[in-house]
Amino acid sequence: MENKLAVIAIGGNSLIADKEHQTVEDQYSAICTTAQHIVDLIEDGYSVVVTHGNGPQVGFILRRSEIAHDTAGMHAVPLVSCGADTQGAIGYQIQQAMDNEFKKRGLDKSAVTVVTQVEVDKNDKAFENPSKPIGTFYTEGQMSIIKKEHPDWIMVSDAGRGYRRVVASPKPQKIVEKRAIDTLIGAGFNVIAVGGGGIPVTREEGRYVGVDAVIDKDFATSLLAAELQADLLIISTGVPQVALNFNTPEQKQLETVTSEEMKKYMEEGHFAPGSMLPKVEAVLSFIERGGKKAIITDPEHIKEAVAGKTGTHVVK
Image (tube, rainbow, N blue to C red; front, side, top):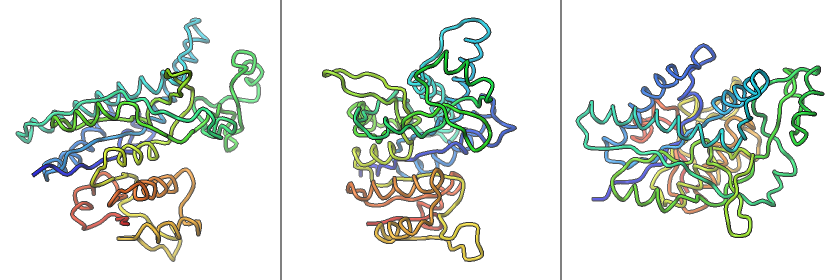
């Protein structure tokens, strides 16, 4: 019997536990814990494609680049390259953690990372209205220098904490390396792909060109899962289940819901933008594209959620 395919998105909480644990070593330690939960699923007979966030890591690379530029005149690293750098570095940690876990359990399995480009539409309205804050906070006093050094940057005041650069967050249209990912799954590999939502590229006169933007990780994961015709999409987050009226006395955990019900709750405004909303939208998009089932849960409950004991299960 052919293995069922699960596509799992792991969020920032699976990579960086808290503000006190942001080093590369701390990150690897968090990934090793998450890898155990992923390998549980593989041990239960699933083939797995893992996707991951990269928000804080891109911020760190940009900050290092800015400091190196200011203090030693080093060239700046474009945002699109920062995305590619994190795919390699985080992918390396996930595949190593998974391979070590396979060996520990005596499983003849292997993980591999695919540096993944994701095509976006150059006419996407998001390019006219950049909304995704990235990188360093700047003071009012630093703004004149920033405008002189980076005239193309769009800066906004971010929640009173200072000024930050904002970039476009276009919708993913096509996974460029989809055939390679498919081939690796067919050969028995567990694949890490579309890290950080993928490297955004547009088509210019028949060739791909990288663009400075950030694709939402959950939307890219949803598209990948649909293109691979996955049996299951798992979006991992900081809570075991999605709730209605979150953090109020009327809070109600969602167990199994239809995509129609979920859409209704979304339209009623139950899910916070920038938090649970994109995860719910990604799940609904997967179901609309022919997906059978999606689960939203936290990393430590993946095995229990797939067994139907917890998690929010969204079905057609």
